Length: 116
Length: 113
Image (cartoon, rainbow over all chains, first blue to last red; front, side, top):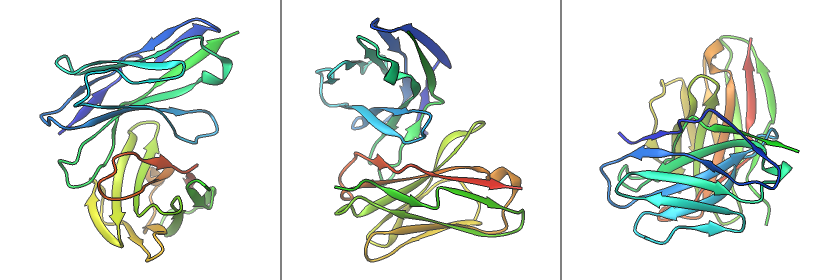
């Protein structure tokens, strides 16, 4: 079974600084997808960034970028120029079509606080 | 385009009762998945529906069931509620079976007393 591990339950960052959230996963699949979701206190789960395993280039979305290390099964999220609105729970998630559907397997999450 | 909607947003039920939650996917999306979120277990996959057929089911007891209608709207039902069923229930939709990207609704907060 696939597992996703986020080893940092909580992190904090100064406004305008950079922070990196860690995620490792375990899978025997060769074709899969990885995501970072953001869940603010309002509870709406928002897709932040996605990475296809077959792509070597790391995904970027504005201030958000990932460091995808396929051999190490590592998928970290870097947030640059942190803003107060970035404060939220961040979940790393994995999916593949191996189970017949694209069910998501989530990590336990990292609570990010942004200090003004 | 409107996002995924879930109703009701909050629900309080008593042990032993049953509950039905509703999810309307993004227009044009044909797949709906359900997840349970609790502080202890985190986010866990319940089941997925595509074109009115259940494609996959997570490791939950038979008290948890669901269905999907021809307009892609989905309902999940929990019978004989237990205190441990208190959770945030999230629905996610994706456009088709081969699409891997899921979009979540705001969730239904179920409290069982």
